[in-house]
Length: 305
Ligand code: GLU
Image (tube, rainbow, N blue to C red; front, top):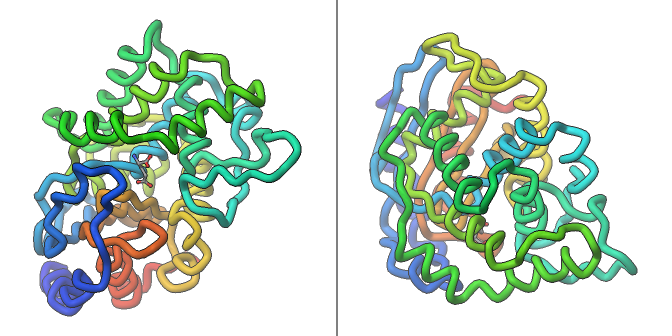
């Protein structure tokens, strides 16, 4: 496996020059576009790595499956489903051009900003500080990494410049979908997106989703099977922004990307995988990351379709 991964990194390195690091969050612009890494965590818990597999980057939208999971665990699928739908929007992750007469849950899904922000309101906790702390705790637990921490510079950078996300929150409030204080809610979401992870962490998290909520090593159930099914299904249809259909066709497994350059991939019953490379395409997906996962899928026949 290590030989396959080394070869993939070697062959895909050229794609790091074909994208651009995110700049709309100023602190993300300092990322090194030449970084590239891939990781596979197998059914039996073996970890295989190549390239910059242990480099840290901010999780960004790859936290969305965990926000969804915690909302499901805390509030149950009925409330989650009533607030946020499951249909792919075909629009960018931060779109606010909802031209419908009234915005409803049916227009959004958990893998775009509007849906993920709305779902933060369903996480239990007497304050948004507590909600964030519980999300961080869940991230650490699923990643098997108690050291996972916040990147304060990225968090403050997004907090200062996140006007689009502010607009989305006020839109949700304007349509009566949420009631909570906008700045506290946003602060929780910005912090959640700024948790530092590595490729290894993401592959580990993906492996738990691949095993339907069970830690494949210890056999411990970390969350109910039906919630893994809920999350994996939305990853398959909406996880790669408005490139989800193309990803399903060319790569073929549930996955989630983030503008920090990370992508996590869930191969049901088999393994968790993750790729990292900060240079993004116009949709916000890591260019080399997608290429690496495409090659991995081809060489190990991982497409579920
Ligand atoms: N924090 C980012 C934002 O809300 C996450 C976007 C992403 O990774 O897709 O704009």
